[in-house]
Amino acid sequence: MARKCFWLCVQSLPGFWIVFSAIASSTVQAFTGTYGINYGRIADNIPSPDEVVSLLKAAKIKNVRIYDADHNVLKAFSGTGLELEVGLPNGFLKETSASEEHAMNWVKENVQAFLPETHICGIAIGNEVLGGGDLELWGALLGAAKNIYKAVKSLNLDGVVQITTAHSQAVFSNSFPPSSCIFRENVVQYMRPLLEFLTEIGSPFCLNAYPFLAYMSDPENIDINYALFESTKGIIDPKTGLHYDNMLDAQIDAAYAALADAGYRKMEVIVTETGWASRGDENEAAATVSNAKIFNYNLRKRLAKKKGTPYRPRNVLKAYVFATFNENLKPGPTSERNFGLFKADGSISYDVGFHGLKSSSSDSSYLSLKSFRARGLLANHIFSLTFSAVTLHLLLR
Image (cartoon, rainbow, N blue to C red):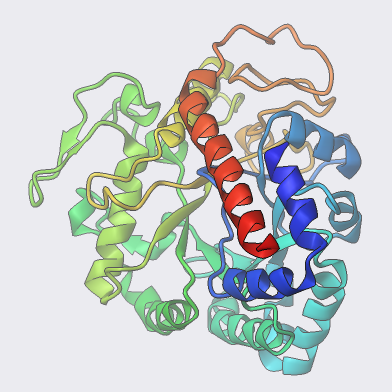
């Protein structure tokens, strides 16, 4: 209530709004809190975007990523307060890299036209391009990112919209132990100039990190409890002496090590995808409802602690879980179609503290995370009241 009242007050004071906008535009905050979700839509049976908004708001998930800039989704998110990162699909990279005009038109049509009602806070340029199979896209990635940023900057949106690109772990070599990780030799020539550009514009390194996939690749030598954030002796990095009690932290610190080796020690790592499949093929034995529930529940607990990793303890971990729904049209193994926290009908796939659009037999079998939020919510409420009172006092003097 205090926040809503304050917002109404500042909207009615043009002078204050100009100053406030100038201050806000000095840095791009593309992620609120520590928890977000990917809203993939490769399916023909999932709820409408309007229903998804209701679902996410009920779950109090504020940070959302999509892989395109679908106008139906952008309209549905208008006026909701949800923070949305849109995507420039891989198929658009070559044309966008070759033409500044194309980049400008794309930004005008898919970003500027929906601001500020829809809170578009970021544009992801492609997805998992470097390390992928299309080498032409490797060469187009940086040019596309630069042209999109030029368009954003020329439209005075660079203080609102952050430019990023997400990488898979295919860009790394020697990722175990974490401190030994470097970028693959054939990736470095593309990665270094990209990192230089991202540093110049203040963007983080975005990583898609899946303990599920790592465990599946070597189940005989990896403790599944280590992958699931469960109790385990973990590992000790022999070079740094740091102890890791879960695989996700190790994967993130491997990225930090590679960045340090490349000369970008200060760059922040944000996890843009992580998750666990609830169903798989015969050779995907770890893809079970039980494991998916444990991983995602423990991930929420890990993020709610608002702490960093062993190698970067001051960089609070932020992550987008994959994904909102099971997507029945995705190609590949069965696991690819079963990463959703929610089923196609809007009910929960398993209980990690959320409630679906309709009741499910899984509801309420797990404890909520209220105990992890209580202190933070109280502090935010007190801060809002104090800031509002001081601001109004100064303005009305």
